[in-house]
Length: 354
Length: 262
Image (cartoon, one colour):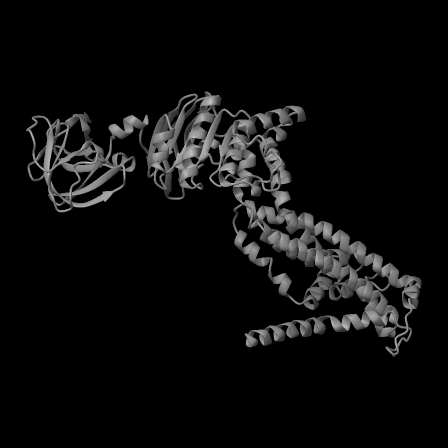
């Protein structure tokens, strides 16, 4: 096992900068998500770490060893592909055995290790099957067993759950996480699914246009996004734009919004505030005055009932705000109703304009 | 309801007519190779005399072995060169690749008479001359595009992630090719090989141009024999060739169908 360091890595394809000076430190044993929209460079970054492609500049180390010019077959990595890439001409057991077999391990050792890996992914009895006889979830497990049986230094997953349906995906998330904990391998996985990134990883790196936008634990990125992009790509956010007052912003119409989190900015500059929809309380009257709370008046334009919660769309000063309210059986507001929105400055993140 | 029945009946009739058109001459020839009369005369009297006399015809037997030998060597050379070329065209991007690929198709369409003439002139010009070695070279050149086309078609269905997966597991280029890529393209390689064998074994025009009087292939020998005077021996040898060719083509069809599956 080993950590992975990516330092100042750039990679261009023609005029297109797929990776632009990306640095990111994957600590030993961690579970990392690389999150971003398509074309953000997340897969390109994974392929640099795997060794399928080499960076134009920058350094990549695995376990302290410089590998940026080492081809994939010599990097001792394990990789799981989006479409599993199981060898169709081999049985499940032979698929899993492949990595050990090309290394010339003894047959007895291979048999033991393959069985252990298949047991780990709970497919101990299916070694004799062919890949086409398996379900999507089972193929996924075989791909995982094949990738980890060689005891790689790092496990790379390219949208591993993308081809599975939703229920199976949630099962596999838990399963993948369990296996990763059990063997303690440094794991880097690429996804465009923010929920997957939030629920599975210890740390998330958000990429956009080949640049690393923000990196940190899921809670930190969710609670304190450093850019509007991070705020809206990972989860939902209401964005207010105005001039900063140092500890908040003033909207163009003069309304002040106090921010208790985020950047410290000099007064006067352009800035935004981000507020998560579930942090806003919605009521039909102003209620007791609260000296610190941010308050806005608006009108409900739409309500979407989702069982455990409802999303209200509130029109306010030409902007549509989103508010998510847990279903407590009371406070159901009708469309067209005038409402008051309140939230604390601590739930408000100040973001430098960019 | 009845209209459907009639259409169905017509369809079946059409298929039988088509098959009759294709196979009737062949079946008659095959029957006549077992008939006593050398002039297609009826009533039919069973004999294997012509097969027996075929066995005595040293020239025809020598030509047959030449044909078999050349076809086998052509097949081996074409399969190796063709598969390697297909893999190279699949894996690597290089300048002029599209142009090279486009150049592979015209030889299939150029009439063999013209290819044969061109080869004859060229082989004389560079000192290769005529003979079995020239025929072999000619056959390889004729059959190679077929192998490349068939193997490339099979490679189009190959998922490049499979090679990447193998490499990520530590396999070097040779191990990747032998254990992952080749097993996948094998149906295409076999089908291509059978094509190459058929192109060579059935080849007349180019062989005729490049053969020397003593050393020749079966189709050329048959042609010469017919010119001297038709004998039912020709029916006999033709029947044998048809049985072998059809067996080969049925095998090809089987592997080609297999090649179309995922």
